[in-house]
Each structure stands twice: as C-alpha cells, then as structure tokens.
Image (cartoon, rainbow, N blue to C red; front, top):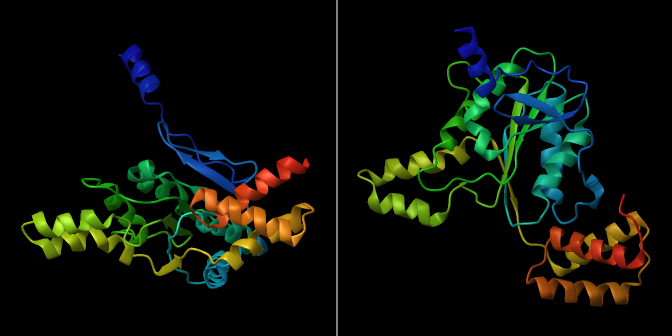
Length: 271
C-alpha cells in the first residue's frame, strides 16, 4: 500500500505551500498547484502609454483604491489588438504600489481558480489576479469557473483579491458563437444570456480602439526619447509610416516593433 501511495504521489504531487510573498509578482501554475515568483516583470512605463489616457486614469485610480483597502471593481479591458491593454495592467500595478501582489493566471488554468482563492483568502496581503487575452469558444465551460471570482458564490470574493482581464472581445465570445446560440438553442434568450453574462460581472469595462497616425507617431517619439535613439522627425515619420503600411496595422505594438528595429540598426540597447 505504501508503494502505491508513493506512486500516486509522484503522478499527482500535493500542492506546494503558499510562498513567503517576498516577490511582488507571481504566475499561478498547476499540477501541482504552486505560485512561481517572477523576478522582474516586463513593464512599459505608464507615461509611454499614449492614446489611452481615459482608460489609463480610470484603471490607475481603481487599482490605487484597491491597494489601500478601499472598494474597487473587477475590470475588463477589451478592444483593439496591440493597444496596450496588458501593458496598462502591469503599469497600473506598479503605479499603485502599497505592496499589492500581481498574480497572472492562464486561461486554461481558470478551473483551478477556486483553489488559488483558498490559498489567498485570509492573508494580510492584497492580490491583483490578471488573465491576459481572455476569450471563450463554443462548448468551452471555463467561463463558469471565473464566476467564482467575479461574483464569489457562497463564500464571496475574498476582500483582498481583485480580478483584471484583457480581451479582444467585449463579451469574451465571438459574435458568430452568440448568433449560433440564438439560432440553435431551445430557449435562445437564456442561452445567449448565459454566454454573455460573464462580461456583465466586471464592474468596469475599459474600451481600447485603434490609434490615429498622430498618436502612433507620438508613441514612437516617446520611445526614442526614453531610450536615447537619435532620429529627426522627417526620417522618423517617413520610416514609421512605411513600417505601419507593411504591417497593415497601426497600434502601440507596431510602434514598439518599429522602435526595436530602429534601435537595432543604430546599436542602441533597449534596457
């Protein structure tokens, strides 16, 4: 029996104990459950996030409220790709300070979120749970696990936990999936309500839209000034616009990719 127990433990090891919270950011991992410390979070300074001023101010205010123990909402950041949604979450976490700990959870690990909440509940620290690129497909029931964080069920969401998610979709599910539910369900209204109600559980929705050309160029100029990349405005405008045209898109991500290329050509390190 002892050998069988040892074999089962090797197959499914017990969850690791809670860390000592010496770090300020962790990644939640499963099999076994554990929190892996992130030594250095990849961040973009808040002042370099151009073209999202209203969303930036709202998120920073909400995060600061949470950090000092005041009421704050769970937040869904949705909209255009590459416009700084995840960068803003990480920047807001840094801006809020107060010892708040950032924990990233992958979408596929959402079914384990109840176990994570039990680990965090009752500690004297405050935790910002973050899920990047959150979305659900047909027959994907992971969204039901997330309701425990947003509504809390019988126990209620721990007072020391808040949840931020980014998504390209406002309702977290593709439009054709919602339409299919309407057309195929026995009770279409109830089927659609079940699918889209998750996004309604976020207290704040922050929308992100494609940037203008002026904002795109200001993003690049801000990066160049920050990292000491010397380039005149005329050359920058011509190259940046050509770069954007070759990508078929204009966003903060495209701006950063151009800056990376420019820095490489000039031998400038982006530290």
